[in-house]
Length: 273
Image (cartoon, rainbow, N blue to C red; front, side):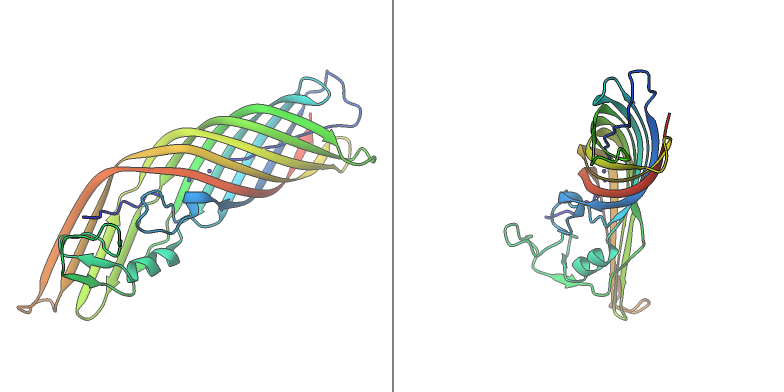
């Protein structure tokens, strides 16, 4: 029997440099927002892989403080948040072509076919729009490098690690026809994990205090475990009130595991302290 437990998460980085800074400088604070593009298993739409996240491009936000301990090296602390919607189009497409066997196992895996021989395919699935959510606190080192000779642009690089709090999305979908219906509900869950980030950030100074920033970063987590995720599948056949009408329901509860990774592109503004 092939049971499905859809558990479907992500972080940023930076680098800085200044005109003629001294050891007494206080660093800078920056705020960025941008696109969070899921990567790896987090972006996978394979219905028969429990580590698939079915995540779409979402949004990220970051508040960062960096302090330089020397001309080129320092430390950074980031507070980070991200949201990635479920790819409901992919879910609807996969479920609409999947065989659901008596006993509520999902079929079409050639390497592990279910023992049942009677199955039904329920078309026209529709899923509610839900999203992955997570927030993180990261700490690490940074570096800064001058770009060009104008003393107005610098590159800030960061390598950070930290703790992430993630929430998996609730899953609600249904297929309705004149002669059959199917409905699946999966509970949401939350868990803590570890996160890391690598980033590069270009700072363009408008004056000696204010700068604009554009950043690219990669973030990833360990395999986060979401405990006690409950999934309920209900199907009906026939017309309600007639002798051929039948209804079946299956409930499964278990742990889901998800690695969350993404590439983030963001823009923002900062202040030199």
